[in-house]
Length: 139
Image (cartoon, rainbow, N blue to C red; front, side, top):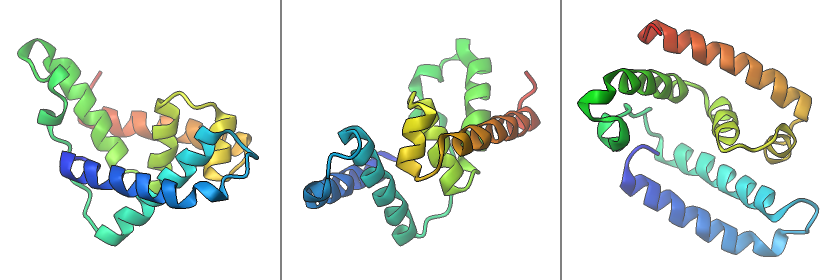
C-alpha cells in the first residue's frame, strides 16, 4: 500500500485475520513463516476487494531521499519503485520477501513453491527490474 491510511487498514485486517487463524497454526513451520503467509494472503484479498489501480510512487513518502543533495539517489529509488509497482502481485510479493532478507527456502514455504523455483523466479525478476529501471534512469 502506498498511503498511510491504506497501510493502517491493511495492518488491522492482517492482525484480525491472524487472530482468527491462530488456532490453525500447527507448528509445521516457523511461526513467522505462517504469519507471513497469513499476511500475504490477507493483503492479496484486501487488494482484490479494493480493486485499486496501481498508485503512483510519491517522493513525499520517502523523505530520507527527498533533499536536493540526493537527487540521483531519489531518481534511482523512484525508477526502482516504479518498476516494482508495475510487477504482478505474485512477483511483487517475491521481491518484497527477498528485500526483507528471507531465504529462498523461507520464501518457498510462504509462497508454496520450491526453493529452486524461487531462485529461478528471482533471477528473472532481477533482470526484468534492472531493464525496467534502466529505461527510466541511466546509471
